[in-house]
Image (tube, rainbow, N blue to C red; front, side, top):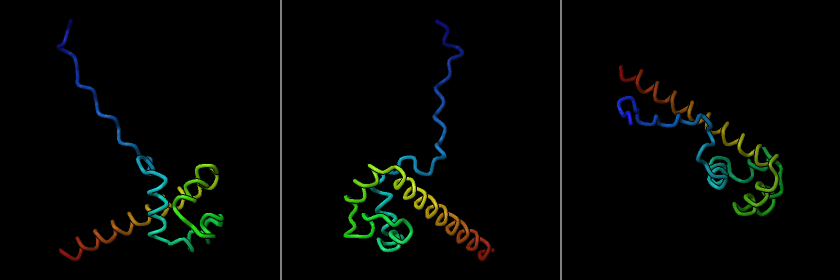
Length: 99
């Protein structure tokens, strides 16, 4: 058995999917923290956001309705990207002010 040319397995490439490893429950909780149920209902007018909203009722509805889940995931990704840009801008401003 020739072991001279064996290489350790290369690590898996990092996923570029912004939803990789993020649960639907954590998405809903984060959106509620960012926007609140009212603003979420304004953006995506579905009953589980409009009338007596809860995380559990939203999870149940979104798991059964892929079109609604896609809208929620898109809202989350847009919010996450916005926050990352704002964070990067603040960081760049701080570095510039420090010089």
